[in-house]
Every structure is written in C-alpha cells, then in structure tokens.
Image (cartoon, rainbow, N blue to C red; front, side, top):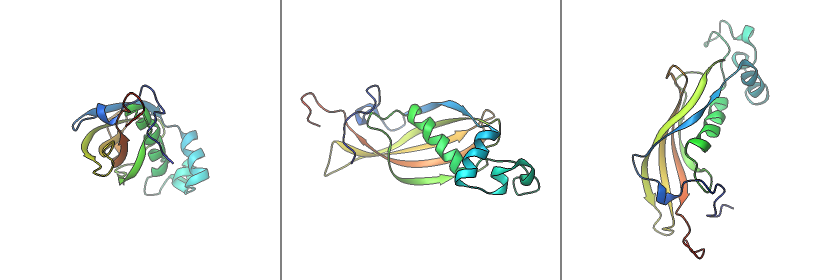
Length: 160
C-alpha cells in the first residue's frame, strides 16, 4: 500500500511540479559485463549474452536487453525526477529506437507534459512525464511516456 508520506525528504511533491518543467539525470555507463550479467538472468538471447555469438545477428554485436536499458532508466529517473513519495507508475508507452552497447554512458532527459488532479482525491494527481534515455553521442536508446501518481505536500498538522 502506498501512502502519501515522503520517502525522500528532499524530493518533489505535486506542488513543486508544473507542466513544461524539464529535468535531467546523472549518468550510468553500460559495460559488457553488466550487459551479459543482466541478460544471463533475464533475457538470455545470443546478442545479449555473448559477443562472439552476437556477430552476424540483427545487431551485429553485443547489445543490452531493452529491459536492461529500462531498468537503468528507472534508476536514473529516481534521481533525475526525485518524487518525494517515490515513483509510482500507472502505465505508459515505451520504445527502444536503438540498442544500448558496451561503453554507452546513458542519461535521462525529460519534461512534465500534463498534470491531471483527481476529482475524488484532490491531494493527488496523474502526472505525465515524457522522457528519453540517450548516450554520450545523444543517440536515443529509449523513449518513454510515463503516467505517475504524485501527491501534494502534506499540510502542517498531517492533513493532506
């Protein structure tokens, strides 16, 4: 059960967000070792687990699983858009225009595009965030449109 209490005292509340607000994350370097380790456990396809076997495939080399890129994106998003109550997802769209590779230094950039307050619970809103994961050459590795549940800052005395 999610409650509207901060998990990050320095995080952002609904009151801190506005449509058009942009953000950027720290970076994360993909390595062959991390690509292989993730894929070995979660997506053991030849182009994710073995550089030699990956030659001659669609990717013609070792590439990260899209789910690995998604997991890294989530990690970066937590610091790039530090929501006080945590990032609570309510759906979205995800695509991988190109695969992350060994040596990619990934970062997330994005913006808040829509805020829709709940009619029945005005202390919370659905916040739509459009973001993309890019490497050091600005090549887009992943795009997302995420719908996040965000709460307003609790008022003094504990009432939301």
